[in-house]
Image 1 (tube, rainbow, N blue to C red):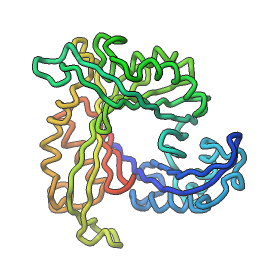
Image 2: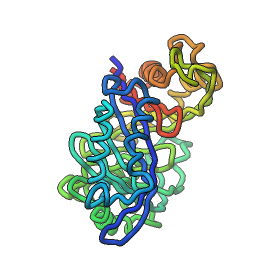
Image 3: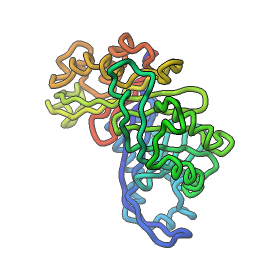
Image 4: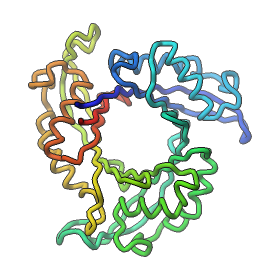
Length: 330
């Protein structure tokens, strides 16, 4: 049976004072909760998230919590959500584009780092574009437990200096995203160093997650469509449209020859017919999508994709800025 989560985000602007002095941030709260978690749908969850951050907007955060670090702010935000009847399964707070903190079965922080590097994949089929020497502006996101953003930065600094403006084939004979993630895991001394998970992004449309035991890759897609949400009781009941964004997540053992779970191109090709069935269509007129809402859409996409990609583990569908649903096929 397909499991669903609603997901929503709410921004706010605030100042704080810490050891570095006075500064301000454009914060963003992300909330995930199951359908029985107190929100009627993703739109209702977004409304609750906005109400939770409202007291912090345009304020000095030290007047709400001291010290006003990212992790400390999650406590009052969760309390405000629960006062509205929302039981979040996962909370994440981004304080800057490259850092933040999260909470779900424990607290963690995260920080993103970039480096520019060349590579080629020697074991791909003949004619594959990745067989040619090329390059990427990589992004690596580290999630740490018991660490703050500064400590993650210190941990990454020597590794980042080694990789930046280098050829990854000098470090790995077959530098796929998956094998690079495993190499970084060892190089960073995880999990003993406090790193609990890391993400390697070759582009903004594809990436790999590694937790020391398994690799999960994802491929981003988008499509344009119209819909009308049945029984919404607000403007969503009118015919309207969205630029939908999707992420298809795959978990599978590594191919011992290729060094990857699946080729990103193969994932895109397998998902192509599902996307084409939705693109430039009226969704609530399609069989199985009569409800017209994003949760129904996420479940439909997961169930339509699973036969084409048996390794599918998750589908994220967003109809707006951070507002959507996540489906885990059963």
